[in-house]
Length: 197
Image (cartoon, rainbow, N blue to C red; front, side, top):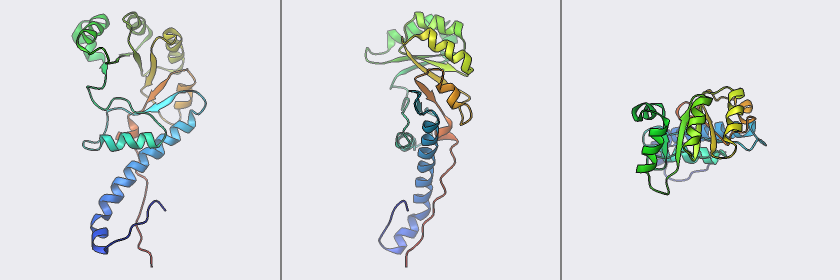
């Protein structure tokens, strides 16, 4: 039993479907997060969500991730700077993108940069990011990336994360493993409501 309700039957029945849909969705997120966290227990890595959330439900979905033992990435664009491939292209390279971010972000704002390979990582580390998003790297490449980072920045793995791959990803020594599917593709927990005699 998840909850017990009391009140007028009309009111309870009117809100039944919305309440069950909401509770089932959030419970599915928390359950999936918990399952992933159990698979990487003892590694030091933490599962985190992304901004790939349902419009209007971001706060609730991110809370569900925390209930499942995970952590939250950014809530919005103003939480931190995340430099992605299009930003790098628009700025003419990693150095330009990092310089523009530093010039325009407040002194309290952290900067993370996404890299696809070790050459980009080397260039990014020269610019001194707070975190590096290691995108779609194999476990072998992730392990080499973590060694290159050497604790100078938070190492976050992203891409291709599922129940079959997460243990190998966590074993590379990354700090965070971001999983967009926690909020955009999670299976709803099947819940129902029954009146008691």
